[in-house]
Image 1 (cartoon, rainbow, N blue to C red):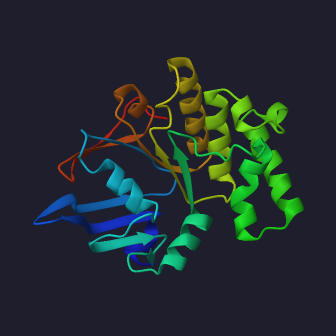
Image 2: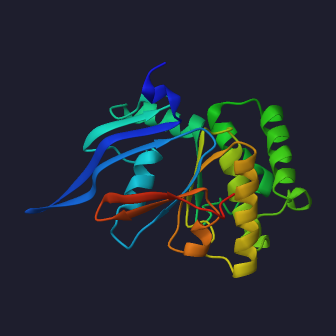
Length: 235
């Protein structure tokens, strides 16, 4: 087995440079990172440190300017748009601060959506959606639409949807950012429970108390990783 295949994710000297007229912005500047199966990383840093750029690259929403990105040993750095779309659909789950639910669809329909796009048979997708609604504590809200739910409930739907395709990695961008403290804590407890069940999680946050639930914290500045340290209180 190659070294790249031993990790779910491996960045090798990844750079993402944006041309801004006569100048260049080095949003990521030589980042190397290995993420093992079942890891839970929080990513912290000031505005402009490269957190969001790294998450976009990890989620195959953007491409490195240079360097290599391996997912489960597969070099995804130079994949076509269609191939990247397939990788996102099959191997990556996304949880956003703004939930990104479709308001016209019910809880179950929102959860089932990734499986629909994968071409999974309807009865299989619906059964999986019901299973995940129960997992996140929303069985009694399955027929409701997002606007009929609280913020915490919407984020639970978003997490269930992110898990629909049994992803290799769950990427969370400020998952508690729109929630009150108590509801945010419940969402973090859910993420910790999922991690204990083996889900690999990478979570961007600007809050130290949120980052503290992860097993490791990546500190970024000026497009580089300053340090990676274990969290004693992590899940």
